[in-house]
Image 1 (cartoon, protein in one colour):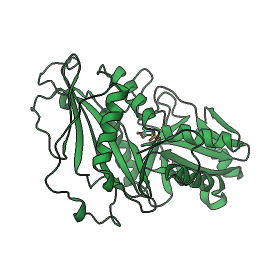
Image 2 (cartoon, protein in one colour):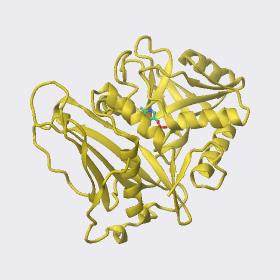
Image 3 (cartoon, helix red, strand yellow):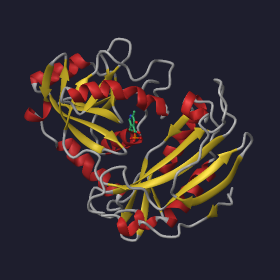
Image 4 (cartoon, protein in one colour):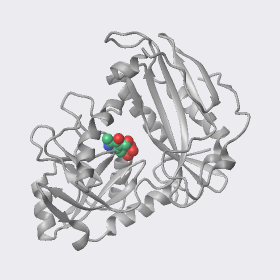
Length: 351
Ligand SMILES: Cc1ncc(COP(=O)(O)O)c(C=O)c1O
């Protein structure tokens, strides 16, 4: 299906004001954004307009009752080409979130046509330097101005983009969380709904006050099994193979996680998705069989964990381990995403 996307270009580009050698993460926004409205029956008025503030009623349903979901994906530059990494997986996951949050689905054609039209207009914003990318934020929120808890009838779907540098600059120290939970069985942990992130901020703030970079979430019932970190999935490289916690409805099924699993299998590593207990990790860190810990996510890509703290004891994994698997994966992921390696998995869409 072809959507009739209208375009209003910004009078002046802001791109000259941007120091592309110093872009940070999430602070600079490209010139345009894509918007479409759900009128209760269908998606209407798909449009590209200059990036800017939205005008909303104070009674906007999303603000009060939390029907607000988002995605995060990246585009990379390869000479004059712009390469998108697995965008249709983000579209699929956005619709899984929409379904759970009683929000309308986005047709693949609307998502992809809006995205490609926006990237075409702002393609000069895709940075080319090492470690940088154009971060893409598709999101949807309820727009009824109505006070009362019920699904909204109207919604806004939007996409904006920002040129970004690396999310983390060094290996992380993480705290195994035993008191607070990010999600509960039967809840919304597997979605990217805004509330999941708001609820995680307090335990993360406490961990940061203790000198850690992130929380390592454990299962919400026993707090003995590892799940994921703030916005990333978790991997352990041991002498007997690579383990990542099996997915539950309390965890987000990361697209980078899936890519890393496929890359590992393709390179004939043993990789298992299974329950991973904190006591197992501690034992392996102590007896030297734990070689590497790393986390994966669109924003962070693949970052090593220096060590983890559990009940006041710190286990420094990097000191005695190595970074062989994480370095290999990082190189492969970067090569694939920047078009420097053949796209064997069909993950890249070229613009
Ligand atoms: C809670 C959570 N876990 C894991 C991830 C990693 O997912 P992906 O690799 O698709 O970015 C994210 C990021 O979206 C996240 O927010």
